[in-house]
Image (cartoon, rainbow, N blue to C red):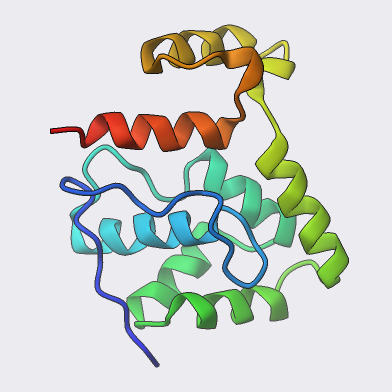
Length: 147
């Protein structure tokens, strides 16, 4: 096992949700938050949040299962391999299509989330109609740690 030290998310942001581990968007960010939660350095970030659960639901695994792997010191790649082997089987094409779709999605297009997304985008200074959720998260992370 190649244990990865936990990031201190009170001092730096987790990985971008765009970074793909094992072909999955969101996973690198979720794993950063999971390790930080275990180390009690998660700050305002939350592991097993709705975004993380979106990935976990796609594969039919749970945050608790992922947390157990992180507690045992598994690397990002090892966790991705475990996810591939457990839960709902997915082909590489299905993983790519899902990841591409999630990366391109915008809450502004969802009537139930449009107002919330417009509000947080306004606070972040970006156009909600032209921004994805990942765009917002990256800007929000930068603003959170701007000196």
